[in-house]
Amino acid sequence: MLHEIIHLTEHILHHNWSLLPLLFITYLVMGILEHTTGDHAKNIIQKTGASGPIWGSLLGIIPQCGFSAAASYFYVGRVVTMGTLIAVYMSTSDEMLPIMISEQVSPQTIVKILASKVIIAIITGFLVEIFFGWYARRKKKPRDFVLGSTCGSDCCATTKAGIAKTALVHTVKVFFFIFIISIAIELIIHHIGEDALAAVFVSVPVVGQTIAAVMGLVPNCASSVVITQLYLDGIIGAGPMMSGLLVSAGMGLLVLFEENRHLKENLMITGILLGSGIAWGCLIEFLGITF
Image 1 (cartoon, rainbow, N blue to C red):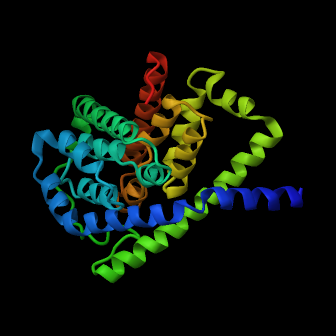
Image 2 (image 1 turned 180 degrees about the horizontal axis):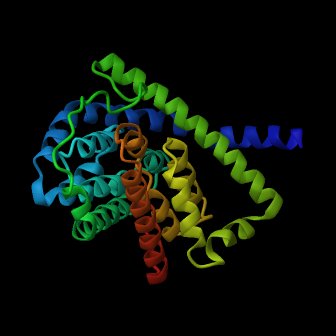
């Protein structure tokens, strides 16, 4: 068993080593983008009004690690609506984009996935406004709060050196997740077979989408890494992949539960996000949509 793991480790390191420079370049570009557009994007969403779900979806797709967290702060402060919050959560892709870029997935495929997430997020956001908007509007007044750091210590940087250091740290962390997850997937495939693993997600309707969506709820980049890697390895299809990525809201839910004192409201938002992700994944699977 030990010899098998050592051999597998060497194989995966050899196969994935080329990802490091691509991941670093991707995170460096994303860091520069976040540094130059972050405040502007947050100012836009504060002024969205009735078109909040549209702007939330479009801005959420921008690879900014703290944007879903910022949306949570804005919701707690009653600056944005529940529909806008859900739209941001569903369009956020967490680690999906850098992994697909580093794995050299075709640009057409990436654009199709991102565009689908935006469209789904917009539709869901407006549906939430229609059916659940009354709940948020019953609040008598906005809550006073201080908008602190909306991204973790490995996310924020204000100088070129800080951006480069952050990109390097994020690259190493995500590469480590990919490495560990790849070993786990390979061991599972070796012992039970790829077909048996894939069957877990496709044999029973809704089960695959539910498993992926529950994984996506975990407020850690590992969840989107797992879902993206399973999709790229051909273990799961477009339906479960979308279910998982639609609920992978980064640190957004964690900030919501930390800052919003209304537990029932937090659980309702989480339930709406989870149910929507599963429903859209099932619809994609039923229609036979591929990317």
